[in-house]
Image (cartoon, rainbow, N blue to C red; front, side):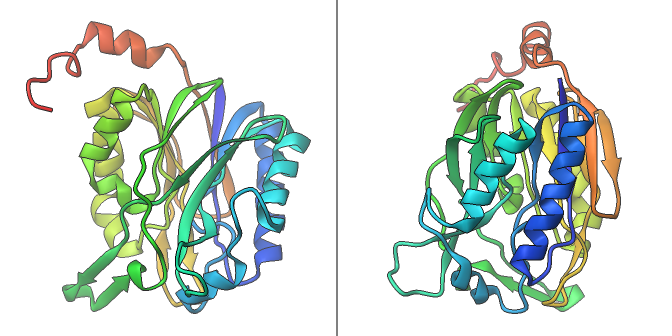
Length: 271
């Protein structure tokens, strides 16, 4: 089955971002993909992080989710929707959930994951500081969803650095991970490939990792290098830059077969 990681350079204009996403989803569908994953913050990379609250929606309601449902049905494509802003429990607050809804090929919502790990980091040597918790509210539930390519474990960006989360997803049946991201250029150069391949290898699972690339309105540079890798850690497809579709054929039976032949997960002694 063919799958796609959609790479974008999103900006402050939500409508323009959705139009770009739709063009790339159409390209993925025309290439024979049955599922496509969008990057983190595909709807909006604003100048001020708290501006996301201006576009936050209730689950199942609002123009962004209506667009995603319609796009999935129009292109007959499962869509893992990267992340978009959903309202948080704090009424009137300028914080949102970074949420990843999943739609099936008929346009029906099948799952919703809220980003658990927030990127609160100081890169002293690079003079970079990030505080996602100033504008975001953390989720608290791991989520998997059954799809035509297998059960997907849903994650977002900084979640990638927490292997215990991926083990919980495996224990819930995941054979594929999606990792929509907006990795900084600095951390991407250092760790992106290593972490993605490690999560694939140690869990014997496919990884679909769509990313943001280039310079954004808040002067953040993101790493790009969207990729798909197999359960043995081999990169099947990758693109460093550009608004593009990164597509590869995967075998949904491969994770189960490898886990039988190479039973590292079954051999665990510590949980």
